Image 1 (cartoon, rainbow, N blue to C red):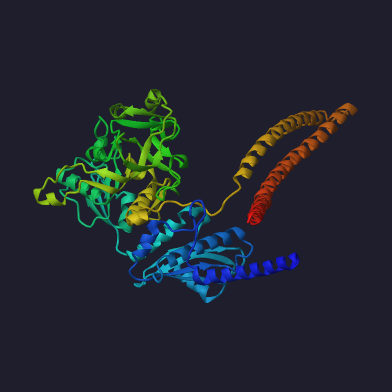
Image 2 (tube, rainbow, N blue to C red):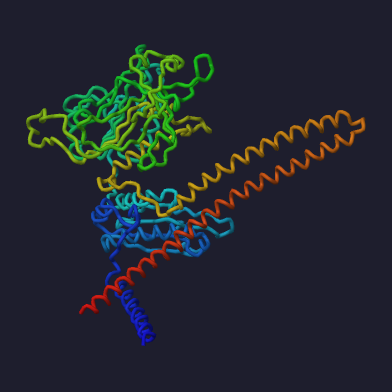
Length: 615
């Protein structure tokens, strides 16, 4: 009887299981529960807002070479991740995004379509063997944007890249950038040489990408319809212009601010023996809860750049700083892919104690840093003297930051009584990026000019221009786009295996070094004996000398074999550690969980029988 009851229960469970699967696919197909740590399968609220604001449908064409990528497990897993994310966008607001998945096989119309869109193909070596893995998108106006190839190394910015593409297609108008500066960024006559200088490269790049309007610090008002306001080493601002900037920030405007305690790229400042003049937006910063130490310059012994000295030699300048990847934030979209940022005489930022301002540090000095009075720095021309004044504070200084959140206006009321009613006293959506240096905008710190067959060619050796373009591009988007931060990655490595790998390598590296020293000593002694043999070639070599040479040769072979064994044992131990942990995670853990569930089921049946007995 029990045998038939068990079989009947299994049949019923199978029927219920298949019924639930069908019911789930029919009625609950649109419902999803993302249990991943960083919600990598879910859209952020910013992305959902961007999709919700789409007026006309956008077409997504996802190209992935499914057949050509057979055997590429890692790439195929990431392609599944991308496709799942694209489906999330399509399902967020049904009908606003139309997704079409295409496999562009070799010599097919689909491959021609991918090529026409401008997608990149990763070659596999043979003719017609290539992998397409990109996204093309079009709107109702036939505007087109593409992600040429989904780079797995940029996975944490996958959502941002897709949302940015949607925003650009749904808001195709050009970004209006207002640049306020007194620096000669547009070129003109150099007061020192009398010659005409070319426009600064960063300005040329911005002018090619966006609608840029250039204003001096003496302007009276801010132009309307400004999408991004950029201030580069601003001079003294009139009350009217400063108030417009303040209200622009209070109204949710986006600012990119470059201030400087000692600008060294202004020709007028360089003509002054006292050194350069600084810039600050102290009134606005104070109201926001931000402090900029314009009276001090950051010196960095670790990140200092080598420059040509007056005597023709090379000397390290602690005030000329080259920030590497360790000092640049890898999580923010504006700085994630930057490797080097060069600048001079950086100032640093701090937040006041009462500030409720949110900030993300984008750039900072190394621990081996110090600060020096701006006046002393400007009067000191010799880098060696700066080095002699240096004393490490064992502290990092914030050189650039992204500001967000709550901020107060710097004005209690409007200077113009006619605009008193429109005055905004505070904001909860401040959007600003502040940088404590303006010299990094100058060509000499990041780009080199060369003449190539009569054409001037600019070759960047640092990422200063990329940073400016990234910042303007990011700030030029909507608040929803700016709110999208980097996300977690899909791949989940065995971190314990990695840690054990490091420990195993350390253990065997010591033995390897001992054997390597023995090998070097043996080779040296062998070389000495062979030299003696060559010098006395006319003489007869004794049996003892020949025996010594043979012994050294044998010892050399034994040591080389021992080195190979050490390397082999290292790989074997690492592989064994990985297999053990994988077995525990994949097999043992589910088995233990099953035993626990069986134990609970047994206890539940025991309690049920006990209750029936009492009845």
